[in-house]
Image (tube, rainbow, N blue to C red):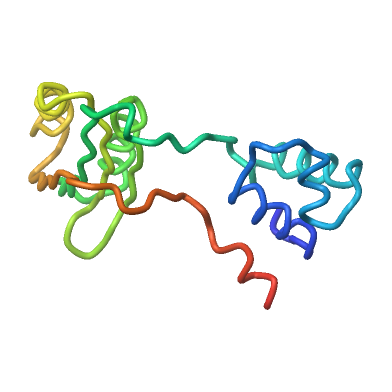
Length: 159
C-alpha cells in the first residue's frame, strides 16, 4: 500500500505522535468518523504500513540501562555476507535498531543494554571474525536528548 490519501497521512501522523488514545479520540484528531478511522487503521496494519504500536519509556526508572551506538564493518562485502550478518543481528534482543550504512561502516547499530557485562557478552557473541566482522567502533550515550522513530509523513501531504 503506497497510495496514501490525506486521511491516511493524518492518521499515520497522529498515531506516531500518540497511539495511546481510543479510536474515538483518534477520529476526532483527524476529523473523520470512528468507523472510517477504524477501517483505515485496520487496513494500514494489515498491509504492513503500521508495523507495531509501541510505548516510549522514560529512562529515569531504569538508571542502569546503557545505550550504545556501534559502527560495524564486515570483512566480506557481498549479498550473502550482508544477509548472514542481518539474520544474526535480528536474533539479538539487545540490538534495538540496525541500519545498513555507507560510506564508512557497513552497519550502524543502536544497542540497549543492562550492563557493561552485557555489552562484553554481545561483543564476544556477535562482533567477532567468526561472524565476518572486521571492525567495531562503539560510543556510549551519556544522555538521551530525543528518542523517536517517527517518519515525516505529514510532509507528504504537501506533495
